[in-house]
Length: 156
Length: 233
Image (tube, each protein chain N blue to C red):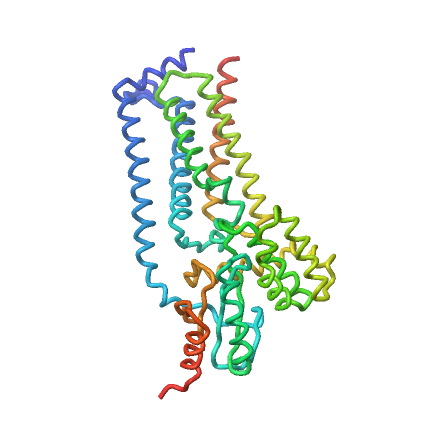
């Protein structure tokens, strides 16, 4: 009978799993933001069935930073996070990469709080696509926190 | 550091290339799928004249005969120059058909292209809370070229406060009401109904809740209303 320690399939270390989790969330966030960006440029109705409000949120003056839609900035954010997470996953463990990844998840989480507050208090409408992005950014932040704590634990 | 070394040996150079290729491919496929989905939806939505707007209710701002069998619903933006141009035509129609037609106005502020679309719509709604919606509506269109060119939303609101005084409402309450949830909610309801009805420009008119191509003159609009008022043979 084979002992679990002698298994032929190596298990992925925890910090690699954390990189993978952030990469998956970032990929989903990219898809979400890309859809919102396409909607912005092609001016199409969104099938907002859960929380009616995407149309209101996405056409509000708060949906733009100068000439750039926030959704496009979301695409850039999630692609950057995906790039760093995959790079960290496929490279030798690097404190610098993990810190950069964590820093990015902090920015994403902070911006999500700002955007959700704007929807609640300024626009008075909610968009489930934006809510999904906020959930993903929060999950990335939680995993990022875990990653940085694990790294601190290992280096102590 | 045994833990970290073991982690690195799990991923060889060829595996790393495969991972990057898979990620790049997934991103590309996702982008193409989204573009195709969004563009195909755009094609479906082209037949705009089949769109219908919700029936006018007591929650809408209306003028004319509430029992009329013909209704005209306008989706407008107070900062839209085309809406201002249509305003005299609509006023003339209300004067002529007021006892036979019910006219309604709903907000469709074009926030992305008009800086004061939001504050002007909220100003009209706030005036409405003191029973003077139409008076503010008319003043906003009449003075559109003045308040549209001011430097900030605060300056625009200051002008609207003067209009509020002119129409005899409390300007202090008015200035507070423009930011209330009730005012925002009312506009949001209008915007949602506009999006449901495929409204993508202003003004957009619906006669008996069916979208019509914008009439090019008073006579053309009049003939549409006359046809709607004529009993079917």
